[in-house]
Amino acid sequence: MFAGKADTELVARVLSAQDARAFGELVRRHQSRVRNFLRKLTGDMALADDLAQDSFMRAWDKLETYSGKGTFVSWVMKIAYTTFLQSRRQSKRYAAVIEQAGHTADAEARTCTIHSDELPDLGKLLAVLNEEERAIMVMSYACGLSHREIGDVTGSPVGTVKSILHRGKEKIRTHFEIEDRRHG
Image (cartoon, rainbow, N blue to C red):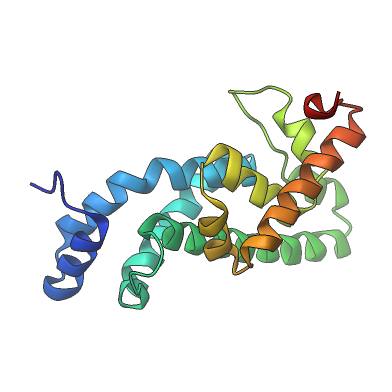
């Protein structure tokens, strides 16, 4: 029914007729990408699935704010990234309360570690990066977003995205003493 329809056509259909099936098609098209992005950020499949669901629910609620500027997927990824950041803030507040209560071990057990079935050392590589660098690296290399799309998601200029990617790669190379093949 929706084969061949562009995302923007589906968005228009949802907005004009509150067509839940058209929105369902948008979710179907992009849920794997959003989930994989969040799984790489959180290292927790269940949490990532919950955050992806929350992200699409927020997208439904805020769909009228999608201007058509940029791709629909980058708009949804921005919502997913914001949802992730809000979740991290809540998690940190919760961990602080637990720690104050003297349950430090419980708080440490809840900290996020990154796992990947595709690349066993990915978690180690990404662990040397700060949260912003890690998110941008995942968006670029795991999710395949362009620099412009990453800029749309993070609210950063394209030049900043490129700098963060470069800095992240350099941190990984330096930390793990990986030689840059381009420079010998």
